[in-house]
Length: 229
Image 1 (cartoon, rainbow, N blue to C red):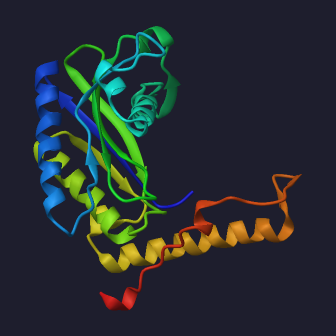
Image 2 (image 1 turned 180 degrees about the horizontal axis):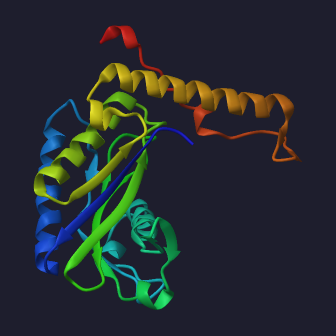
């Protein structure tokens, strides 16, 4: 629950061209580290994604810190083609079809409190590439810079030609309007706070009695002053 940016990718070409596209995006994102307007703490190398083995891990990942390894495992889940949208219905992809997919992904850490941003492409036929992922920014320590950073990252993906769709729950992607961004984060924070407050007051959730609640909103309540823009 909270402000999240969803994004889809696509590419047509062989595996070399898919890798080159991602590497071009990655190098351009690294340049953002020099601009104080953005927050880019870590940009990983590009890792292989494979689904023929349930516990497959790219060999290069095993050389990385544990945080990178955990995020890689999450990226593998995000990019797994479990469902297909056919005739306005979600159809579960058979396991044998899932195993035929492979691809590439790299991981980006922006601000603390925000989820990592995983940029990748997968393919079954080594010709048609796609991918979907999302990043929750609701609880970022510096929400404004974090959210704008991820939008800038998606701008780079669009310029390189792999971005197919963005759904920004804060509506900043399509509007580039800071007032609208502020309005949406304020409303989201107020709503989540009220829900958690009600649960804490009643000491009950989903019909079950509870003692305490550990919720991210209690550690980070993001509000923006609309009037300052």
